Image (cartoon, rainbow, N blue to C red; front, side, top):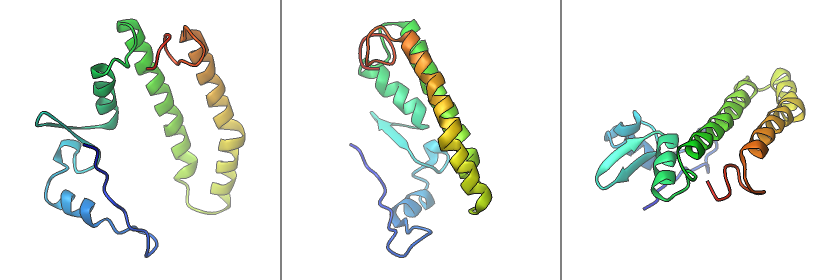
Length: 138
C-alpha cells in the first residue's frame, strides 16, 4: 500500500504537515532516522529510498539479466544521484542575484554537460534503443 503524507500549503510556507509531524513524534519513522520514506514488507520496516528502489527492482526483475546488468543499473542510479547532488549546490544558495546567476549557469551549461555524459554512458551500456541497461526495462 502506498501512502504519502499530505502537506498543506494553504497558509504559505513553511507547510503544515500534521500527519507527518505526528508520525515523527510517535517514532513511526525510526527505520529512516525520523525521515521518509519508510518501507514495510512482511512486517519488516526499512528506510532509504535507493535501498527500497533496489529491493523492489530485484523483486520484480528490473535489475537486468545478471550481476553485470545489476552493476550497470546501480552505476546509472549513482550517476543520477551525482547530478542531483551537483544541482543542490546552486539550489541551496540564498535567494538573490548570486543564486539566480548560479541557477542559470546550472541549467544553461552544467546540466547539459551532465546529461551529455550520462547519455554517453547509457548508449554504451544499452543493448537496445530506449533502454538504459540491456534490452528491457530496468
